[in-house]
Amino acid sequence: MHRTRTAASVIAVATAAATVLLVTSCASTAGGGPTSSAAGAGGSAPIGVVAGENFWGDIASQIGGDRVTVRSIISDPDADPHEYESDAADASALSTARLVIENGIGYDDFMATLLSAQPNRDRAVLSVQKILNVTGSAPNPHIWYDTARIPTVAHAIEQRLAAISPADASTFAANEQKFDASLRPINATIATIKAKYAGTKIAYTERVPGYLTTAAGLTLGMPAGFTEAVEQGNEPSPADNLAFENAIKTRAVKVLLYNGQVTDEETTRIKQLADSAGVPVVGVTETIPKTDKDYQSWQLRQAKEILAALGR
Image 1: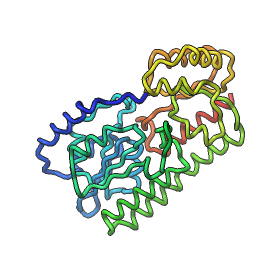
Image 2: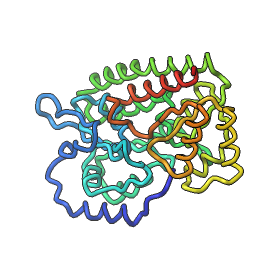
Image 3: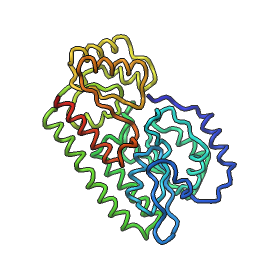
């Protein structure tokens, strides 16, 4: 659900952070989630990177290796990422970061407010929305599920890191190449789903896995209006609710993909209905869970679970 954070609350945090005496670089803020890297080799200061979300932070960490230290602002897998409130540590990290990565598409609007409150002429900001040229009136913001296009984002990160530290350019390039290769099992699994189940109807409570299901050739067997309402924090219409219920009860949909991080009374009821009707439920999340070591293992596990559910 794309509930917006109040600008006042974010500005208040950023203003408070500005009063803190910053005597260290962004390396001191590496405790912001599981995507932090070790200090640079040879004792040289690593490049401070701040990512709006832990999946972008994890990718930056893999490409940067021990030449970066990464803080991911949204990193709690047990929390609703749309209700996140920034804190002073986040604002402080942003004030000294050399590279900032934001998702865009309205998903992390709090980043713009924090960045404007913490000016830094040496800081580069990468917007994934701009890198991938995502446009339209209501595009799906969960673009990290578009695994076929993730190498484009990885390359942009590699290029920016190389510009910041030219002496490490060859290392960043080699790490990017390794990262890109690691995505092949994910895309191969998606291709297998498409080969076996293209055209199969599925349902989801939100568009979180929308890019994945589209790439896999799966179709939506419930009203799109339901997910639009949920994402906006609104109640789905009675007609959409009824159509969704019927799709589940009659098993017109093969699988229900359920956002385990963002739930409410209505989505919980739909999940329970699917369980009762014998429709397989596959949980998906918006950030990397603690049980997955990195972006690739997370996406591969979910793709495999969808494949297995379709075969039931």
